[in-house]
Image 1 (cartoon, helix red, strand yellow):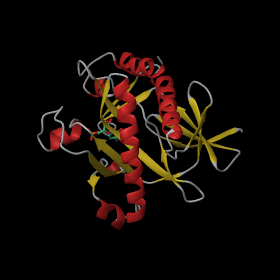
Image 2: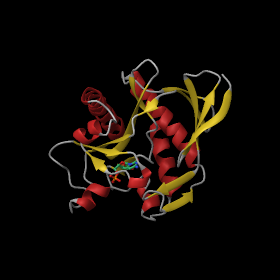
Image 3: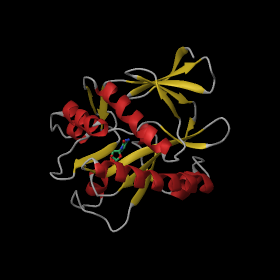
Image 4: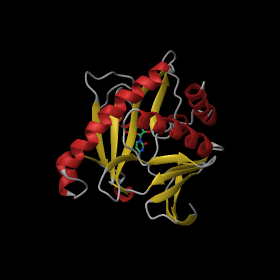
Length: 235
Ligand code: C5P
């Protein structure tokens, strides 16, 4: 496999073509952004940490029957993945109320809802990734109702698996964002990454934040928090 030209550059990652049309290389950068690009910084070693953390999590999900784009970690910063067409959709799972939902509905952060909440947002930077519903997603041509059902079913299974994984490490999985894609043979798979950039992870004992909120809210010790997550996943 040979790494070829860059296909796409995102906020935290670059995607490269390879000599195989069905394979891509995802490169993890140290760049961090928040509030739709308003806040920007470089967090030294974040790319290394997220590559490792996401690799461990994707391997665990694959072992537990979740179809994903992940093939293998190539080096410190690169992963080999299947090329997919990403649904322009952020699927957000909320086990505990925090962040935008706490703000939008004026609910104290840390409130445990009676049920798991799944939000979907339309991935469109110019609009600030607005919250939408299933009917909007179908009307916008983002996915069919059947495809949405399949994504939600996978999302619920992923939530059970990840909640259990983190619970054993003394971490509460507060919320997280995932993305799905479609392979060239029409299969829906989990894509993108799962890391402290895309999850809220609180220490179960102290509720200390061990995720990107340390950057968003200027809490300091961002790198240390990501290192702590990797440490607990590998010990
Ligand atoms: O922004 P909000 O509070 O709704 O985020 C919910 C969860 O989704 C958080 O874990 C956050 O890190 C993640 N998220 C993300 N990328 C976005 C928006 C949210 O990873 N663009």
